[in-house]
Structures are given as C-alpha cells and as structure tokens.
Image (cartoon, rainbow, N blue to C red):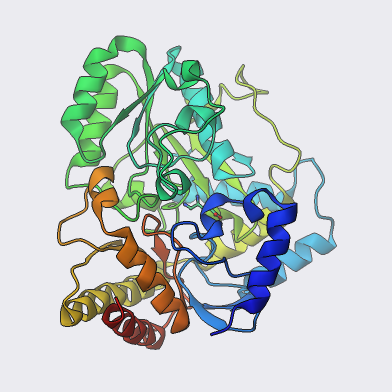
Length: 426
Ligand code: HOZ
C-alpha cells in the first residue's frame, strides 16, 4: 500500500497545526510512521487520501455504532442542517433526545447537553462538589475522563500512549485534590476513603475501561465501589462516554446493575457530531443553573444537527443490533485468540460487547500497570501488518477497538486472515 499523499498532507499539517493533529493519539506516535488522512467513510469502510480502502475498527473512537455515513443518520442530519445549523435556543430534536436518554438510562431523570465528553465530566465534577460541599475526587489509574485539569493524573488514552504521567500547565494545587487508585482494587479505594476522611465529593470511573485498552470490571468490583461511595457520602460518577449505548441500550449501568449518582455521556449520542451530556436524578440536576447555583453553559450545546443525528442513531438501536454486535465481536475475539495461538504469539483479548482490545502478553490485564506491561513494540508491528492487509486499528495498544453494526461476519473473517499474516510477520 502507498501512503504518499497522506505523508505529504501530514507534513503540511505539521506546519499549520499543533503536532499536525487535533488530538494527540491520531499522530501515530505510538506506532511510528505518519498518520493516514481519511477522505471518506461508508459503513465499516474508510478510504484514505491515497485511495486505500480500509476496514475500520476505530469508528471515530466508538462514536459510530452504526458505521460511517449511515443513510438514515445522514438524512436526519441533512434535514436538520437545512433548517439552520445552530440557534443557541431550545429546539425540538434536543428535547426528543433528552427524553430518549431519560427513558433509556435508568439513573438519569434530567440531562444537560454539552459539546464533548470532556465538558460532561468537568461539569459532573463541579456538580458533585456543589452537591456534597466537598473538594476531593477519586479516580482510577488508566481511566481517562477527558482533558480537564482535575482528571489529568494517572490518566489513560493519549497520556498513557505517549507515556506522559501528568500534563504541564496543570497546577499541583488542582491535582492535589485528585486521588488515584488502581482499577479493580476495592481495598485501595477503601484506604483512599480512610485517608481522605469526609473530603471526597465523588468517585469517577469508566465502568468498563476503554482508555488503557479494554479492561472490564472484575465481578463485584462496581458493586463494591458503589457501596464504598454510599458509606462515605461520596457521589458515584459513571463516565459512560464510551460505554453509553455501546455495551447495551442502558449502558454499562444496566449491564452491571448499578445506579450511579451522575452519568456522563458522549460519542454515540451525537451520531458522529460533537456532543456530550451529563445527567442524574432530579434532586442533583436541580443544582444546575438556571434552576440552581452551579453554572455551566455553551453556545453550541444542544446543537440541532448533533441532536437530530444522535436521535436517529438511538432510534435504530434495539435488541437485535446488540445481538449482532455481540455475535460479530465474539467471533473477532475468538478468531484473534486462535490466530495468535497458531502463530505461537501470546496475546490476551479483553472484550465487553463491541469494544475489545488485544494485549501482547501471556498474562491477564485487569489494571493499568498490567496494560502498560504488555509488549507495545509487537503491537506496533502488528498495527502496520494489519494496515498493509487493509485493516485500520486504533494507533495505540492502549486504546479500544470498536465494532459497528455495519461490520459483518465476512469482515471479521478477513480481519482474522489479516491478523494471521500480521502475527507471522512479528
Ligand atoms: N481520547 C480518545 C480516545 N480514547 C482519542 C480521541 C481522538 O484522537 O480523536
């Protein structure tokens, strides 16, 4: 495969854009080489600037559960944009999407739309502090909750990919209020509560981690987290920006039977447009301005095009969609494991529904240190082996792969054949 046009575009981008990209992981630093410029997408496929067609397992980092340019989503978005792209005023698609979210996510009685997952978590944190009148938060190592200052401690995603323990420009005084503990370790959470007394406003967690690769919660872990929050008077914030409508129609909270106090959403609810949301029971959301004293606002929040696209996606997600996603994703998990086994390569595939990732290790991966201990140089070679066979994976071993409803069993068979070749080339 030739990538000369992408290469030229990237050197132009490096002159005009910070790091040549709009978000760090996209720069391919973890896998080497130059990022591909994507020209178009349709269903499970993307085409790069050189005209290469690739089977896409990034799917806009999980936002595109129905695949690229789904005709119904496109039609609704086009219809909306033709009626005006933004009003900065209440609109009907926004109301309808809010009603749908409240109907489907059991812990949400009221929702507020924002423009990104980062805005959602940042606002949820402010709200939790206002509600509890406390300042500290506890987060889990390797979980990524966007790039607001308070969360940039022990964070996954781009920081993990680039090996950055913390971001410059974030004041120590801000992260002093952020306590980090290992994921899947309820005893550490318990001691964090003990040593921080009654100061903890909230515990924030990705109920299934998607930002250190995929790491599912151990059996009972989320229940213990919930119990400890209750005992200590802290709110539980579920960051479901990735898992919301991805692991099932009611999100991870339905799957694991937990009712968090605040839920953050993003990605899928915007149908591929910029969006985020946070929601909770009425009593908590009543603190948000203008009803209450917690200020949070945005010109493009509740944008009618994003709302119409999100509504179109949510209206098309049903039990059959999730059954198909499960079948195809399980086939991918098994196929990758078998292909690695036949090639004598040790891997662990972690999967929950249609989010999965493959770690080059013979050990289980249940937390950040285990995820980071996996062999990244094998991932790098595997990544390029897959690209050369026409399969586009996230350009980091510490990110989730996403299957869309457009991916077929035949696509998975092709992916497994490509993986078998890529394993041989390691
Ligand atoms: N933080 C995102 C992945 N977990 C990456 C977003 C992007 O580069 O688009």
